Image: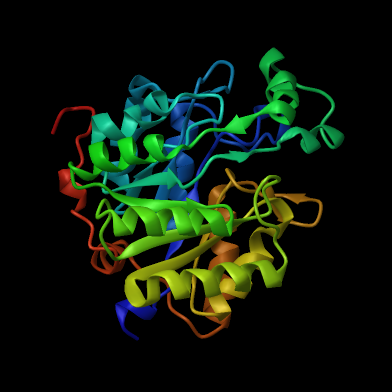
Length: 314
């Protein structure tokens, strides 16, 4: 099997969607984030998508100082592609969100491809009690929240990070985001191969029905042909069904506690590695192979792990 036919597993270790009160297994401290990321890599995740949190409150943070506390640990213990978020939190400015990737110059960074409503407030139906004061207001505030990713914002990130050799995981929450990406391709600001992460099941974006998955795939095929690598992210309970659908179609997959806290109906995942292991079983049951970090670097034409600026400055 050629490298391009192998399935890339990405793992989003901890993100801005869930709060510490939702699961005792959500990694919050730098030590927890590092340990969880390393375990996920050992389970088969070739790409580690990383956010940071305030270790005392669990609140999402994009200060480079917060990332320094776990980046070296991960890079020195796991041969995985480091993918730093530029999404951060919808409550942050684009300058705040891109700062860790600007400082550390990773092989890969996420890039949200359009402004959208980003509704987290339905989670309040399930979760009533919170450890920290910010958690309830964080969710409630999303009822009147616009996740800003203007053309100027996107161009700023593409130009500044692209100049340092960082490539992108283009997060597309709806078909309009695919067309936005096509615009920047036409402008010459990004070059193939494009790594397109189609996102399903976030309120404000496209749904998670199989027809939605097919529609995004057809649109991306028409716009980018053979110049892109397709991956999927299913939010919440949609994580594994969407991953299975895409893997059967030759796509790549992203799992992790940023996107879903669950391993199955009513069963919390105890670690990112559990989710990676479950999706790996699905992939291998289909007779497919998973991609190694070396495969991913070749498939996506990445600049290599040694190019990243770690906290030591090396």
